[in-house]
View 1 (cartoon, each protein chain N blue to C red):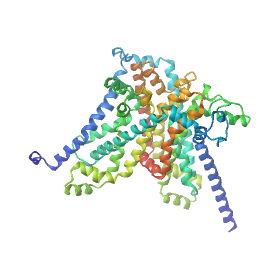
View 2 (cartoon, rainbow over the protein chains, first blue to last red):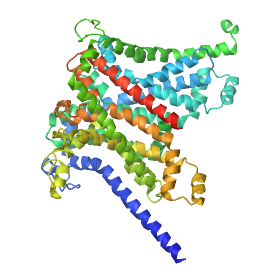
View 3 (cartoon, rainbow over the protein chains, first blue to last red):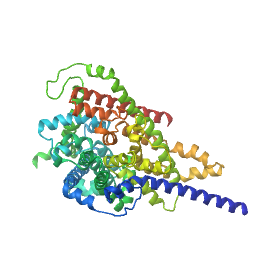
View 4 (cartoon, chains in turn red, yellow):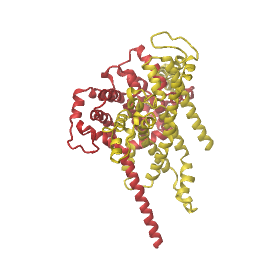
Length: 279
Length: 298
């Protein structure tokens, strides 16, 4: 009896130690984000202070950012580009994945392997030819130039094909008997059955485009066309020593994805697991 | 209408299939396959964006491998990988392993670890750059000062800069790895643990003989994805070093910065294309190697 009690106590002590260590780790993980937000509410003379809550909180950095710089435009650019690309990827990758999974036709394997093989090609290898292409077609400094490399993705095709395997053919055949054409079947019957996969793909695609840096930096020369990361990099380069302004910019760039996470936390984590493991 | 009459159901479906695929096929040819081919062919030319593309055989590759700076760059690129993988793997597994045993506040703790994954690398690079500044600006040195410890040069030092730049990359990727590890640990059937406990196995034994072997596929997945990530490191280096050069004295310059500078500052497109082919080859070899290792073990 007594022995068991000691044993149980040992376990709870161990659990408490583990919990405390994990909590310290969690706070450490959040430190950069906390300090970023904290600095964005500080006046420049207080930035060199380790306190997290500013003694005189101010919104002046934010006001300056939105009134005197192009930041708002960059937010809009990033938002439009990420949204359009995400919808395009969802539609086309689902359509390709569906076709490759549910239709039997000659050449199906070759198309699938060809698309899958594009996963091996790193973006860095493609940016130079893309740049040449954009130059020749006049796509430098245009939304389409920013968007075209991402409109479809091999990753998404693979993910969607995997998920359509789980959709029974009977459902589709029933819809055929009801007289729907193949495109209607795809939109009205098949797509609603793979919503979890679609949302996982949406999360990855939107996040990837929101944070993308290399290609947007290459394809834009005019500040009006910058996306948030490109704008922030050039802005921070200019403001070198005004760290409270740089932190405000960084906070504005990070806020949208963090807010979405707070709202859809469980959903996003599930999506990441789904996309990560099946993709 | 009458045209369709002669077609079987299977033929009609095939027509639909190609109809669905025609735009994607054209897209993948123009935006993926042709550019890949173009990068390879460009790498055998001396093209500098204004002049002609003159075929010069393997000259770019020869120049590259005789260039001491390129070897420094390759060395840096692998340093990111060789430090990044073990550190991030060890941290993420340890955290996931213990997080799995915690019920109270599990969701909240997990969320805290995951949040950095959703940040923008460029933004966080500037936050960390600020942290690394000398006194009285950077909080790391301020904290060191309060503890009475010597100041560190971080980004200004040729030896500390690379690990300093690597930190935010590890930090941001950790959350993803933890989530994947947690899912992996959860998918191990309880019966395995119960059987082990009946056999009198201790925690440590269970960890080494059940948990880790069962996670082989998860570990391979994480190692491959994060290897590719570390070998392609760019955003952090570009935003944390002076002029995005990968300094001081090339101490942090990885392959992708080198490619960017060759192509878009020096406009040596042929040379830059050759560098991208080298990157492509490295990524290919590393991925295939790791897949092979997994197959052999499994």
